[in-house]
Image (tube, one colour):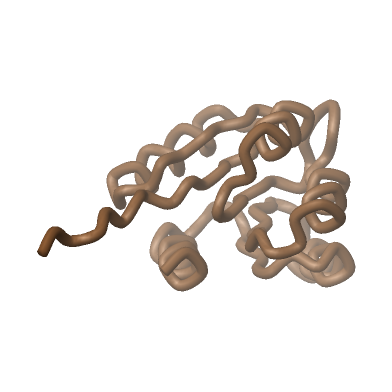
Length: 125
């Protein structure tokens, strides 16, 4: 009997810092994920609207459409998508914002890849 194909999960990394975005995306691809990248919230929302990902990793402070607005849009239309926030803001302030936005997890920058991979693996498993 043929084994059923287990398609790779699709992730979205929305981050205006190109180095952080491409570095995180590269690590996630090495882990077997399909990764879309967005340099701002407007591009991220276009990607989500066109084809909702299995999980979103987003910065809070981005041009055009900020992470807070992006999370609000995703929660309104796709409440089941897990969302993690990446932020260099004060952890207490950013953490409070994330709770108010109904984000699933908050990670401070510089990011700890093991923590992020643990979250991704758990939420997409």
